[in-house]
Amino acid sequence: MSRARDARAARRGAQFSKFKVTQLNLVPLVDTFVSIVFFTLTTTTVGELAPVVPGVTLPMASVGTPALSQLTLGVGATVTLANKPIMATLDAAAEPTNDPRYPLKVPTLYRAMRQLADSLRAAKGLGAGDDLKVALAIQGDRTMRYDLLSRFMATARLAGFTHLSLQVQRVAGP
Image (cartoon, rainbow, N blue to C red; front, side, top):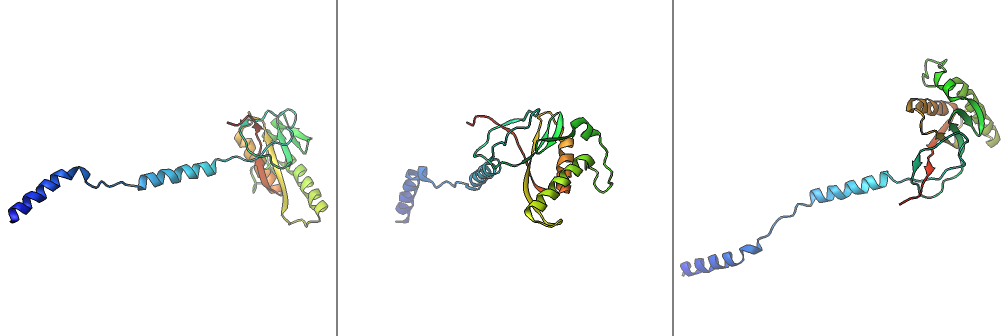
């Protein structure tokens, strides 16, 4: 009897061998989906330009909803702050710092930015050490060097502008 039972089990095993359970490894699939979601969330763009400062050619980018108008620092042939020319860009690039603690500071630009920050604090009734909650948008020419951009950003932070953004020219989205 056990021989018949073994034969029947062998026939059934051969008959149902095509229905073997295969394992599906979901870990790489889940990792792929997490990576897609992460990159989607980190590369979203927001904002629209305020009026472009004359003489500045902005780089192109596709953007979403319009942003608020902001105080602008234009960097083209000249450096302008709130549409007032401060100095030539070549002079700003060549100007050495007078403070060894802040090697990236541009002194002429710092004085103009500090004066503007102080007047904004006075208009808002803030103290000298209070955080100035005014956004400063940097409109840099597409040919501007990154080392100069980092000097301008460091100078703006030293002058009291902690909310900085970089603006680009809007092109038609997909």
